[in-house]
Length: 188
Image (cartoon, rainbow, N blue to C red; front, side, top):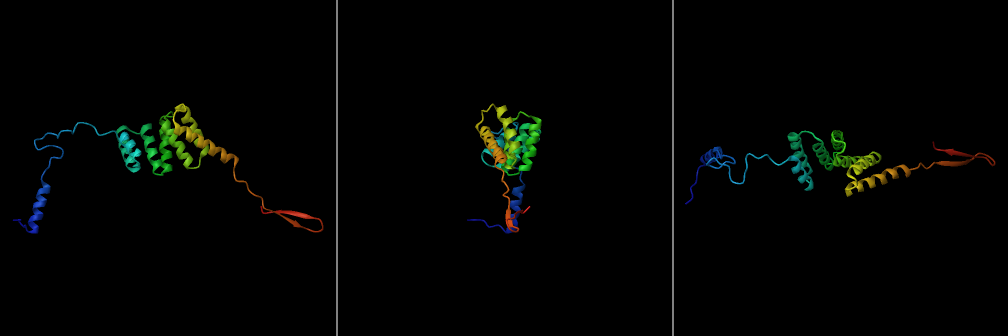
């Protein structure tokens, strides 16, 4: 047999049940459940952010990096991570600012240099990107394939921009001005 409660009584019982303390992560006897260390700190925001970046979750990674900034301060590693997340989100201006700040704090921080070079390439600044990639390549001793490839692309792009600039095709017209006389007219 199933009991039927009036709607008002049922709503009251639900409210009373919702108001009962559950104790959170504490067992009824006052102890923490096994497997949970309530004294431990949470996972490092940089590590969480790096894992989220690897998973393609750039917005969540940005939030994790912000937590890392609150915990550790704005050091070169945190600034570089924030810049990298913004780069992946297409926020090139913000990424450039953050990466330049990271390099200002640590001019030898290779990931920040590489990411700044990528931002500059995306913005069409191949000459400056080439200089930045050369710094990263030198500091890295040429060991990282991605930096080597980025430098190669920046060199090719900057050289092609210098040597294959679009040439203006002059627009001249030859006009006859009498017997045996011609005048060359231009559209300038």
